Length: 120
Image (cartoon, rainbow, N blue to C red; front, top):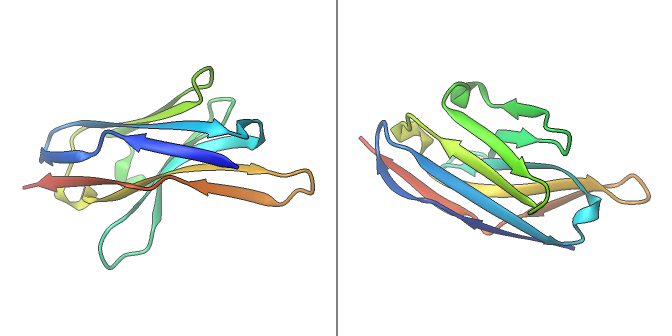
């Protein structure tokens, strides 16, 4: 099992910045990719950004150039720096840790979610 603890959400005005953090503990040896998803009211959860152990990143088109994901493997922590925030970025942001077990089955772990609200 992997436990994920998020922090850093809050209320910010449009154009502002926030930094989310997610610390992983437990069976972290099974984890390869960590990332952030978000879910706005009435919408499906969507990928925001992800980063592998090797540092390869993937971003949603809507956040490219504004958000940066990074990872401290020594501290088992992933960060999401969010700049130039827009009201449409308002959502609950969830940390995700993904890996595979010895049978090749995918393992997905989720944080409790942190609210990000961007006012216009």
